[in-house]
Amino acid sequence: MADDDDLKARLLAVRKPPPAFEEVRVAEHVELTSRMLRVTLEGDVLRRIEIDQPAMSVRFVVPWPGDELELPEWNGNEFLLADGSRPALRTFTPLRHDAASGRLDLEIVRHEGGAVSNWAETAARGSAAALSGPGVGYEFPADASRLLVFGDETALPAVGQLIDMAPADLVLDIHAEVIRADARLDLGARLIDSVTWYETPSGATPGGRLADRMGELDELPGDTHVWAAGEASSVQRIRNHLFKSLGVERSRGTVRGYWKPARH
Image (cartoon, rainbow, N blue to C red; front, top):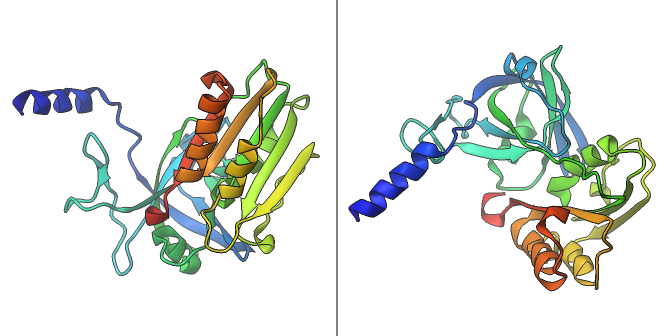
């Protein structure tokens, strides 16, 4: 047991801590669709960070209902509050960052029971929250002529960024899944080469239709790369088909589980 404890301590010691949380305030609050809210944040930390890739990430903390904002601290493995409990923390794609004004946008899927979603529904100008980051984003591969993109509702902000920042000669084949038709977002100003929308059947796992579509592929041309993100079990199906069934090199696919139902 002592050896196991020592090994755990050594592993925690070498893990690079993420950036500390810093306070931000709500500047604007906009309803984009029946399923998506946009919250514009402002704060000094937003003047210092750099957002230079699509699909980067920031950790975002809001106060639990009835509580004041408390900045969580890194314990070597995770961020915790002073009493050892977990904060209301989720990860989002930072959008439309403006370092000069110290602002950026987060787009938050609306759903009952979500800690951050519930906060966002009533967040007013000046409401306090906290942000840590950013985390690494996506680097467009130099050897790709086509990018196959799969994203559920939580990934739509990142998908829009991929579209906006993609090289002009990169063909984009977008597959996006939403709960219902009125949850579709404007994915950007660029003319998309191909976009297919899917709706999640009632009671089904979000992203399941994207996984089904991936499973229909018998091969992936050598000049095609894949980016996929969304509900963890659905993107795991995409990951398994891409890397195991098709035998595609790991360097040609970026597959990220953005959320699990218990924590959404």
